[in-house]
Length: 431
Image (cartoon, rainbow, N blue to C red; front, side, top):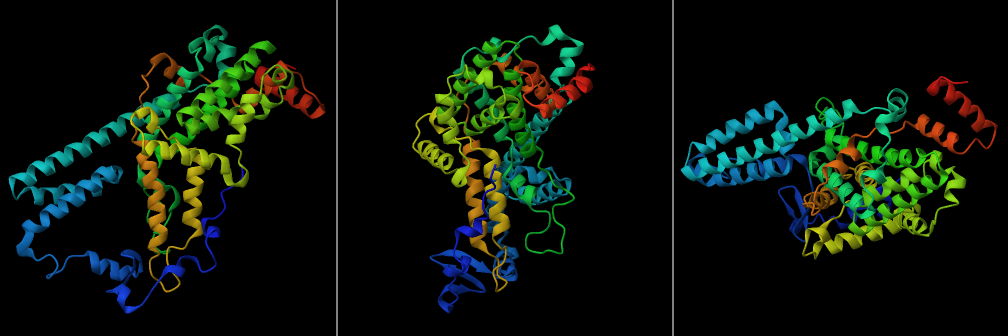
């Protein structure tokens, strides 16, 4: 899959400086503005602008300060709740909240409500992570299960859910639940190993927390392997062809819903070498619908077709009157790459040493758009049986997929034949 080009390539050689006006009219205490938008400024000037002083927030006006501080803390805990999983941060929050609450009764109620909301969010997060850990610890290679308990895993996805549209709905349930638990701060911690404005200070390396983001990427990989496993499992060619056509229909329904992540995971699974080499099986498949889907997710021209479809879904979401129309689930790996290359391709500071606010505005814009999408409530009723199958059924490893593929349609050359013999020996104990 081609990498997204550095974001800096989208701008001319002058970079962000082309909009930087440094006349006296546009400057204010070392901060530079254009059209009332902050473009740049020294870190020292920004700190001076934000930190209270005797004239700015005098002690005798604490009642005027309290609402502002409370508003800041409320927005912080609502937008970045995971920051407060850090014990030191939580202690500081409680200390500041106590000082505010010691004032008027109104402040006390608001502080209590803010803290309760934060604690509920952190408790739900911990419970969700415990479930993920339990699922991960019980995951087993399908081949191992087949060898030890061959009768315990005879079901396939079609026996569990025969309707492609229903499966697409349940996949969307999984996607939206996992998206909902990714905090915006995880994007920062995924890419920034040091303080973004000081190369000498370690900032995130010791407390990097991106578990939910990583769990979502793992879900994509699991779905791809599940698709490949379901296709390679059947002994009969007609059953494998039926399974391919089933997943083509599921992928099409995902596209119609706006679930691009499941769509790409399904396509990736169907394009895995153990699946794509099954030429006799594919010969029995009507591939016209699959060709259309592959065209939509074609990586050429920096995923131009997909990005066009995503913009259409995003526009539909803005004017939607129902939760069903609001669903936008982006191809997550590409979103991560876009943010990564924007972060890497543009400097944190301008040549004059000022903070490059325009870069951080663009980063915030992309993350904020994602935050809007992830908050959509799934309109589809959960089917416990289908969800349990999707999340817990054992799948083949890559080697097991190749072995199943060779067992279904024999090796075509000496290289495949040697690999087949090696896999039979190592995985099945046969010569």
